Length: 387
Image (cartoon, rainbow, N blue to C red; front, side, top):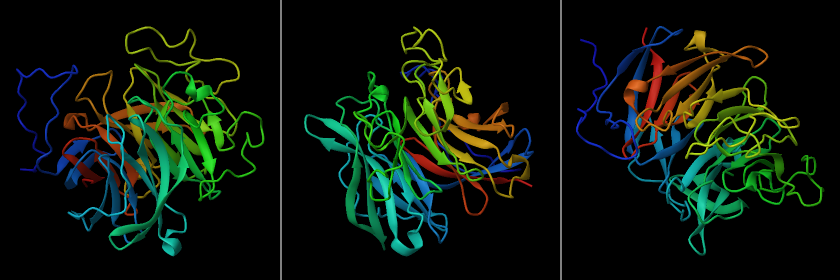
């Protein structure tokens, strides 16, 4: 008998808010799954016992850095999670969905050992500010840690995300969340924008709004809600993001300098109470998304597959889903096929039987796909061919 990923028995009588399914615990593996174009895949639990893991980055030796939202940076070597966290992470405001979030290596990491990460910094009056920080990884510690970019603080529990990615131009792209009020349209705020900065956090003079009165010089594009996926396309070098809509209206965008992506002026989504966000989902002068989700899937980490392990998936985009249609326990992985002109052809939903919040998706240097499940007992999963 082929061993399957065992799922704990569901208590049919249990009723837990919000509306949805009970999330089972991943117990053992591997799970063999039939998919549409890559006939059989194997899903293996590489490491578990992570507390709401958020992001991962591959080190040159093949080991992995993994962030945990409560404020720990962990390392996985040869498939084993080091029980000791890497020291040097500053205090985080770990409330609601805030805390330690993204992690990325400097393009010259082999020379300078610099690691970049984002976190929610606690400030006075119980407020939090999204921050980009960097430090030098030496052994099991981050040293010389300092904040290089601090966005405006906010008192609530929304707009807490902050993704980062290094571009082919050597610049660091940053996406602080902006789903509060009209902050995504405010030129004096860093929230709800895609930012472009040097590796020390300073704004380069060729940014689209540099020198323009009232605009922060770090801004590259504006009108974004919560960008929970931010990548540099490995084949084109273009910056892509995905962002959570409210109740519907998740979207994927190709980011162009100086453009406005609409939030909250236009949206395909609705308020969580039901009414539409805007009368029309498109408007002249505002960039339209290349992919939209209705209902929302709480889109998260994103990767473009370029390896040889899954030849039929080459060029496909993978995104994590944390829940579908506001229903708990419906997280999954989605595969999107686009034309050469970035026109959507089809989508495939996978791993829905796990009922896990898929927070992160990355292609490893071995050509496999790696996922993180954003749960109390979170796991690092590997996807490989079963044949």
